[in-house]
Image (cartoon, rainbow, N blue to C red; front, top):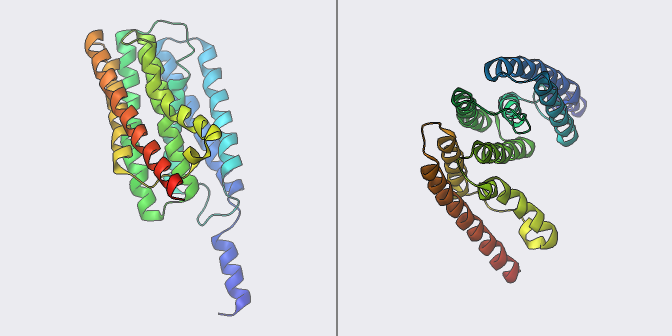
Length: 251
């Protein structure tokens, strides 16, 4: 194979994926509209709910196209990112519930718990697919940001349910506060090494918030569980801050 032939193969393998990604995003839009229609009928929501879901998805699609590398191997977003996009559609259908004035019924919370459980299961699926197909920086960031947003949405829904006070919002906000702190103290913006502790605690937060949303769980129990989860999350962030501070001192 000569250099020219090799170059043609390379260009085919790493072609511009944005046009193909747009197709994936269009399919995702159709899927999220169908999901929003089902959710609206199940929970008895106004038509404005559908509009909010579509607006949220359009914002997500814009962010994906903005952050997506110009060239990637494989067609479109890739298998793992398509799973993440499907998870994002489920999460956005929940996020639009936050601004709804309607009081949710116990059955509505079971719907939220079911959708959230599917999101968490698919998190393991897209991780498995990513390991087989090769994890990209974009894919890892997409997955991480979606996980953080899901936790924030669930924390807000728990607060709105009356199962815990507004302090529970810290469970969803701590990660964003940490990122904001990195703008003030650059050492906090440095890349952290991979950690199973961090991943495990993220899963724990999600599970605890789902338990707190359960209509059969007393509010006192929900508050106690949420407080323990928040303390665990705070301790994890403290470990990371300490590690970053020590590395900054050594450098």
